[in-house]
Length: 148
Ligand code: DAT
Ligand code: MG
Image (tube, rainbow, N blue to C red; front, side, top):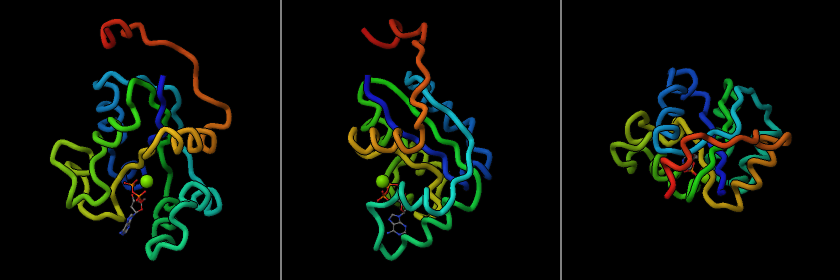
């Protein structure tokens, strides 16, 4: 089953949105396969965002990600990468639909609350980086009520 790496950024933690965000993924029917509150250092954050090195906002992005603890998660389910991106909303909150996490809770692109993998391949890399111990192995007893 497909997995995505989802991370609540320091503003989401500080603003008390952890429960709300987890709830949206849970209620959709996805299952939680990894969860930890952690602070990352500059090198780790730069590695996570290595594809964006050279962008004018890169330094500000790294400062933001290391400014406080983040909640790192692995969510699993059919099409969770693409659907996770829909739940999160567009990168710039001004373009994010109401009903998405960024559309409902964010205003500025540099304080957009949450990260979600943009492809199955990046999910694989990000999960390996953030969860070297691997996902927790379990199956929800609701499985047959969510999948036909
Ligand atoms: P996303 O987080 O939607 O996958 P991304 O991978 O293109 O977006 O960029 C990573 C983060 O970098 C994004 O969540 C916020 C920041 N960012 C992206 N574009 C930006 C811009 N034009 N100005 C400032 N920050 C930006
Ligand atoms: Mg991205």
